[in-house]
Amino acid sequence: QKEVEQDPGPLSVPEGAIVSLNCTYSNSAFQYFMWYRQYSRKGPELLMYTYSSGNKEDGRFTAQVDKSSKYISLFIRDSQPSDSATYLCAMSAVQAGTALIFGKGTTLSVSS
Amino acid sequence: EAQVTQNPRYLITVTGKKLTVTCSQNMNHEYMSWYRQDPGLGLRQIYYSMNVEVTDKGDVPEGYKVSRKEKRNFPLILESPSPNQTSLYFCASSSPWESNQPQHFGDGTRLSIL
Image 1 (cartoon, rainbow over the protein chains, first blue to last red):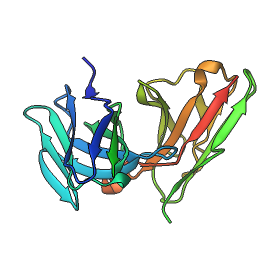
Image 2 (cartoon, helix red, strand yellow):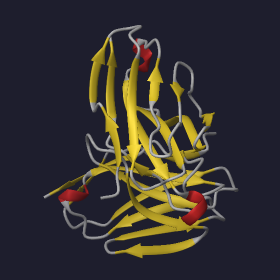
Image 3 (cartoon, chains in turn yellow, green):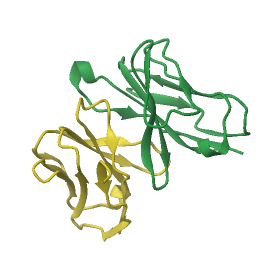
Image 4 (cartoon, helix red, strand yellow):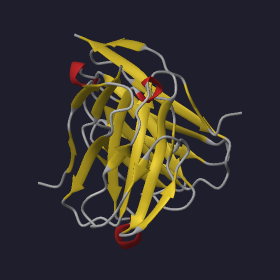
């Protein structure tokens, strides 16, 4: 079993839809959870960062961590064509900035 | 502006011709790292550096070298490139000990080894 599993998609939704992106993991020591967004021909850009369990909201984006289920989610409300990108989850057991284990990314396409 | 800068952005070269990809960050970060990104395999760490003169292997270090002589720079060296090193490379940096912040990434270097 891989440490971090992420459905690669692609996921296609109409503008305005609510998008749910998910990752599961096997290492119970993970305590730092991140979501990165990667546009074509660009580097990953940090979108959300959560320590331990719980929810975090930032504008249209909500990150959820359920450590009991080893499951993290990213919700995008009122999706826009500009949200079309690849979304990568990343986790660390040590510190948020080191020893990251990445999911393979989910490609999202939002059509207008 | 806080950034991680990689050069070159694109490079096509031939097998065996030594090359260096430079990485520089202006955020005074201690931690720097190199990744390669391949379709179906995701981001894999090549090497990382906890601070000046401190480097260590990541998951896929074979065929690569790094050095960290200055805090801001972390070059990736391919001494004898081979076609299986054709990939998209990213440099990243962070300041985990001071503020426990996640990594910032450069915009990538696309290498093609013929």
